Length: 290
Image (cartoon, rainbow, N blue to C red; front, side):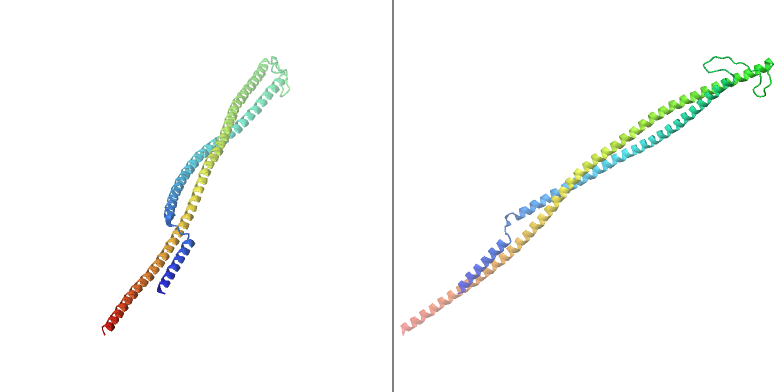
């Protein structure tokens, strides 16, 4: 009966052990190696993330520095362009004013010649002194008076001619300055456009570069997150296996303890049987002697 109980306990422990092993997916051969492998992959992922973060920081700083330099240059060129535009306006007003002055001088000169019957400018008419004064209408009889009038008119014509020459010089100078200002404004405007286009190009270049690194960084972070989940899962599995191993070890210890008790009982039983046989032999011997 005791032997049957031991065999029953051994069988029950074996069945429970098999149930625990199948339920826990018990496979300790590779779990530690897998965990070490995942930890190594996580280490590599962290290293890659640090490298990408440093690269991202460096490229971002370089891009910002370059763009800031270009923007400062654009501000300078924009300031120069505004100044050139003001210069154009100034010389345009100067040219318009000089042109108006030239027209006024030419008109005054033509009017003056007409008053003294000198005809068009191209006509080399000689100055004819009038016989009556244009102011008071009195006759001019003396040669001195006629000479005075002639001298006065010639002086007016000379001053009118000088005025025209000065106005023409002013128009010419204003035209030359205006042309230079327009050329300068055109060059400045082109440089502003070129600088703005360069800034747009550089911004796109650095944006594409940082986007590429940002994508790689996101991928590395996703890998790290997945490895973290895998490590947690494998660690949990290792813990479950350890717990199952502990339970199995306890079951085996219990079975061994039962077997030890059984073996001790059997040994005691056999000793008692031998003692009974010895007593029976002694009794039989005594009866035979009588």
